[in-house]
Length: 564
Image (cartoon, rainbow, N blue to C red; front, side, top):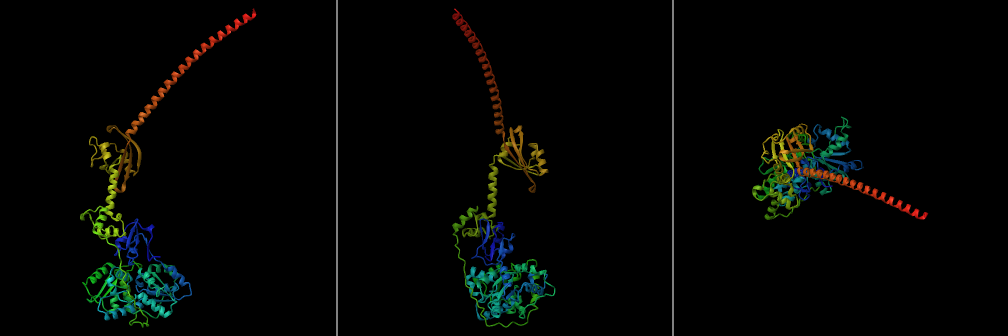
């Protein structure tokens, strides 16, 4: 499964994820959003912003449950921001619930952060170039993809998660099953790419679901505990903006040569300046989430940043005052550039795409951002690259829809009149003007009661009742119509639609007259036929009688002759 995927059935074509994505790694295909893998840095902003929960995060809890029921030693590496992700529970209660799931060993990822902090400090001392922190995988993705020339500035060390994972594997054996739990979605892909130190990654949201199953079963005395190797207090500050500087250098960003920046968009501004040579700091602490990892996309969103920061700083104060001993293990990592290569349109091609959305000049380019892009030109480039479609331009589609609706209404053979709740005429189409405006009775702002009887219309409005197929005659307009009344209460408007059936009525009357004439003619013909029949019958009667008389006379004569 992809780290982040889109359920099309839930995607409602709102483009909110496109607007939220700092690197525009969302493609719109047939109205649905989908992540573009080679552009995505896995910051998780789209997951947080999606109002329909259409963005789904890879869920590895089934793998973790399977490991917990096996004979393997299952270990959790718990991100130090956990105290801010489960409001209402103490650190001991959270750890106790996690242990009740079946984890044999629970350690803080901050132990790995200690190793990384030491590496940062040593590396800065050895090099003359600017060093960028590499503990945030979203930042690493951003630099290798969008600032490939700055890849060499990334500190050549693994993240605290991978450092801790390597440490756990060396300490408990390669067969142990290490699970990382934290607020970061990008960690899922980072662990899979490494393939050695971490066996599964679950987010705090997913861990919360697992804990809900055991929360009610946890006895009060089952308070949890960490292993003996607790984290160095300053390393617990890693999830805070400025925390890396304090852990590695014992300083904050007041030093001019040390920069702390959080939030992907702000990080991009800093990297732009670094690439242009506008700044040359010794070290840049860069975190993709505003406020740091405590504001991760898969953590807790019910508390404010200051509240989360307070919980973490208070928890950090309970840590060790000295650093842990680190075995001789390699934590080096080479961050290779993976630049995105996409064809760019020519100016002529951009203009052609803009024309497809009704933008023929600069004044037509509203740059409203409704499509998700900062400008109409950016949207045109995205269309050229197959990342979006022209119908994502909301003003254009609205204008097109209105134009289409106007074409339909203006060319309708039916008269359409729009009234407000006081029966004042707001709009009418050309057909209405042809039917009712022969003596200039129909004008905007006029009450329809001055044109026709509105009793039934008022009744339909009051009852919010749709009326259709009502036959209405207007002798003064030489009209016979079928009327439809459509109240639209949410807009306080009523639509009247009149179908002109005058010609049909005329033809109907003509047909009725033809039927009557036909019946009368049929009666006349039948009467004539009866009279002829009667005359024929009379004639046949007379000739029959004469024939009989003649035959009788012949018979009598024949008998006389035989008698002689």
